[in-house]
Amino acid sequence: MIFNVAALELPGAGLRATASDPRNLVDANPDAFSGSCNRTVFRRNMIVVAFLKKDGMSFVPSAPPFSRALEDVPTATALWVKAVRMYAAIAAKPKSSRRDEMRRQRDALRFDLNDPDARLLALELDRALQASKQ
Image (cartoon, rainbow, N blue to C red):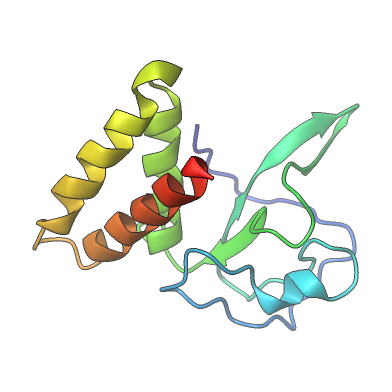
C-alpha cells in the first residue's frame, strides 16, 4: 500500500544529503552507510519512500541495515516508486503464482516502448528472479 504523507518527522534528519541515483534500483544511497545504518538525511523537496513497521507508538524502518528502507525520489512516478508499486502488486498475488507473475511482467516490460523505465524494471525483475533461485 502506498501512502501520501504531508509531513514525516525523522528524529535527527538533516538536509545535507547525497542525491540518490534515480536509475539505480539495487544499491542503497551512500548516506545509508554513514551513522545509524539507515538514512537520516534527505534532499529538500523530495518524496521519501519508506518501508516502515509499527514499534509501539512509533514507526521504524522495516528492512535490513544499509538497505533502501528510506529512499527519496523527485516525483510519484519515479523509477523507485514504480518498482515498489510493481513488487507490491506481485506480493498481493497468491504465493504460488508470484514467480510466474514476475516472469509475465518482465516479458511485457521488455517490449514496452512507451515507458522509459520499462527496461530497467524488466532488468530488476530478472535480478530478483535469479536471486530467488539461489
